[in-house]
Image (cartoon, rainbow, N blue to C red):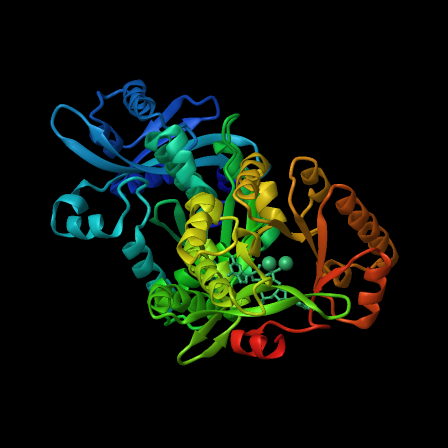
Amino acid sequence: MDANNLFGKNAYFVDNTVEPCEITRLLNFGVQQMGLGILFLDENEKCVYANRHAFSLLHAEYSLDSVYKAFEDWMNKLGIERSSAAWTRLFENQERERLYKVRYRHLLDDNNKTIGHMYTIQNLSDIVENGSGEQYRLTHDDLTGLYNREGFAQAAQNKLKDATKPYLLLYSNIRDFKLFNQLFGLERGNDILINIADLMIQHVTDDDIYGRINGDHFALCMPKEDFTEKDFKKMVREITSKVTSKSYSLHMQIGVYEIKDPAMDITLMCDRAYMACKSIKKDGVCEIAWYSDEMLVNALLEKEILSSFDFAIINRQFGIYLQPQVYADGSLFGAEALARWIHPENGLIQPGVFIDVLERADLIYKLDRYIWELAALQLARWKDTERSEVAISVNVSPKDLYYLDIKKEFTELITRYKIDPRLLNIEITETAVTSDVNKCAKLILELQKAGFKVEIDDFGSGYSSLNMLKDINADVLKIDMGFLRKTENQTRARVILNYTIDMAHELGMSVVTEGVETKEQLEFLQDMGCTMFQGYYFDKPMPIEEFEEKYK
Ligand code: C2E
Ligand code: MG
Ligand code: MG
């Protein structure tokens, strides 16, 4: 008999001159010595082989049926799927608990036809209980049995030390996982994590190092040559589809850091991959983003802003610049107060740098409250001067609606500074309004009743501008010319602009066009019936003293 035929193409090193039964005897002997419990099932899932270790690990009687039954009972009790690639769980019997790691392999022939199934069982109890047990606990995650942060860092460092090819570090986040835990409970959240870990093991190779770093974050260190976005996304989709149910769809975000210096601290690599991960705004089932140095610069800046923000507020480092709001002939009717950070070391910082950061960190309300107060103070100073009729508009961030009682804040300012509410105009962005139309409609009405004018800022930048107008009755529509700059089709944009201005007027709103930069813009806006403007064509935002100097 040809031994190669018997053992298939995989058995390259079978000596044809040795009898197959002799080879079987040798293999069996080897398998008994391996220190692992081994179970083989045939293609009909009947247990056809178990080594001695399997019997003793599973405390089974000496029959194949009983050993497999003990194994199956254990799996069923834990709720583990038969084909889970690898899992580590406690095995309990009368004597004591033991920690076993089980691996599963689906055995296929050269034509991908199932020829059987193999389970290996490794007893980890000894490592856990004697000297290295402490080590095991320190480096492994209780829940999934994967490496934890320390274990992953050590293993990845070791792998990279000897690596001869470039590696990537991938870091994953499950979108809204906190929300999932709140909705469905921690236990189901844990099930998902265990599932992901089990499925992950199925897809990795021996070259990969992987672990659960914390919470819903997994990390994977793999050779660059094995990674393509397309295949990886396919794999992630496969994993997510198994976890996704009618009530929950799992979305994975993955940040990729290409390792340039293998000696770099693994934690730093994880941070960078996570930075890339956090930059993902899209909400697909699997989104991938690569780290770039720019992200690092931004993250550092963000950190710096957040750590010095409270100090800056207390030390009055924030101030307002005023941008004139004028009629076509340049005569003044108001100004918009725009925040500026006058940093003792870095100089003047524009709001583009810090507003977003503060909004993301839910801190913007502190700044806004401060800026509103500065504006109120300014109105109080102008009260009995020639500028007593000049209004100041202030900005309200969408997040303020959730953190502050806006009406209370503004009415208190009016009382404290004894100013006319007619002059403190409140700008709410269109995006804020559309995020909760009912709440905003109510708020706007209340503010108007208290005597304030409400302006819809950046009108036209969102997607449901027109729809919103039927429910919102604001005093002023601020249309930003920025949208003209962004569009390819000027003619169409101007038609839309023209109708928007007409419509606003018909709905009883005034229109202020901001971002007016050229004479040509001013002229066509005038042709469309606009009378109030704000833009560089007239003036840029400027310090209060300069404003007072210029508009006497
Ligand atoms: P915004 O409220 O729409 O303010 C108008 C912005 O457009 C200002 O930018 C202004 O300098 C700029 N601008 C005015 N005219 C022109 C022009 O002709 N051309 C161009 N290209 N730009 C023009 P700034 O001061 O950098 O503020 C940017 C944004 O930051 C503001 O947009 C507002 O959304 C936000 N912001 C500023 N201060 C505050 C604040 O105190 N609180 C909150 N929540 N947001 C603020
Ligand atoms: Mg504004
Ligand atoms: Mg605006």
